[in-house]
Image 1 (tube, rainbow over the protein chains, first blue to last red):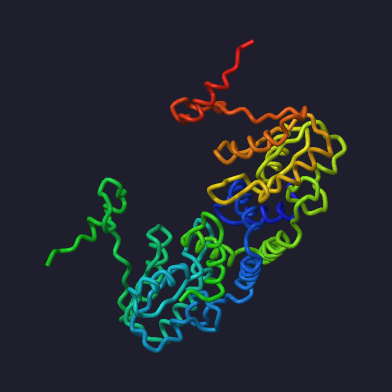
Image 2: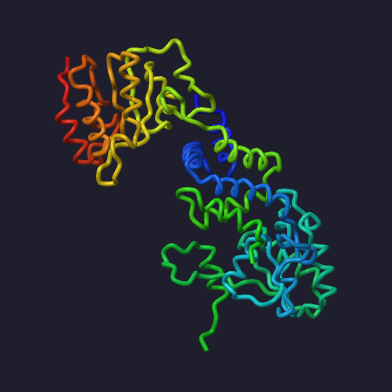
Length: 198
Length: 198
């Protein structure tokens, strides 16, 4: 009953994560009233992302170029490397402007239960880079999780014997959080990581 | 910092109603991992909707053809015309299969405060059709609102003197609703429209 062209668009929106039928219908109908230039921009942007996005040759971050804007930036601190499991977090950190070193993005985290081993997430490329660029500190910025811990420990073990300092982001109670909403694991970690007030 | 191609896509998603920056970012990044065929289908669907969708020559419902599937259907009840203010509701009614008559979609509702007058919403086309097709009943299925009331009353007044029965959808307490969540206006209407139990 719904015209095919609208139905196709509804099905397209339903391909997106978290978009159900009702929302897909609402979004599809909104396109009918949208300016044609905006619709064409949207349509082109979709295909462009697939065509243009690649991984930085050096750090594996998503980029439109051969090398990403951080690897191309001569003013970064070359002594510290922040290792992440998702390019999105590089953009997040840069937006916040809280880190001035270099980045390296793994293709996920080690998860033996899911059959994801070190060689599947590009750890060799990371190790080669660490060897070559002589970082003094490697900082892990993974989402706090078993997989994050496993990956951090694995890399730390491989680097054992070198003089590289290996760190991770502090875990603990988020600033501004109500204590009653903090989960047990976070509180346990916050206790273990407690800092002396100086 | 975010590659231009991703940024363009984020801006595109932000054009959609109810999609903020965070959701737009999440959706844009999800496209990177989506199958290229699906992305191309999505991209084509967007432009196709703008290219192909038109209004049915007879009833003004959105359609890919010159005439919509209802106007083309010989098995409809030609005595009753349901007048709506949005094509979406034609598709909704048809999905539910609760109405077997014909439809006519106005280009909105009369709203003097917003400068929307009868001639702006295609009422002349509706009146011509009513005259020509000799309906016995006109049923208004507008969203309950001041504008809906105004539009219904205006058309009823124009039809005064003809033998056409003019009706509207019943207003009242929705089936399954908790009384405590029913608003005052709805309850007032449900009282006024109360029906004798037979």
